[in-house]
Length: 111
Image 1: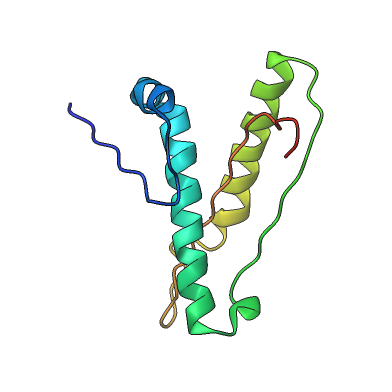
Image 2: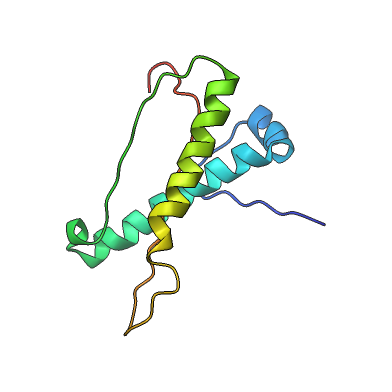
């Protein structure tokens, strides 16, 4: 299956990054998610009254090793499924869709 990947102008790449990115699907997804969040935030900003329609949360967590990382990601996915279960397929009137992104990646020095 052919895959294509597009980055916004907000994500300039040097030649080395441009060469490496097609080889790493997880990083492609992270960069694409960042672009999507940025683009959506700018649209919401233009519409005004943003505070009543969105929540942004960040968390830094220390994980000892790869086993901890895998266990943490699994717990995050399970939590997301559990939290959304009551709202999936619920009927009754018009419903507005909301998007939830969660990304788990190493915190880099200086960020």
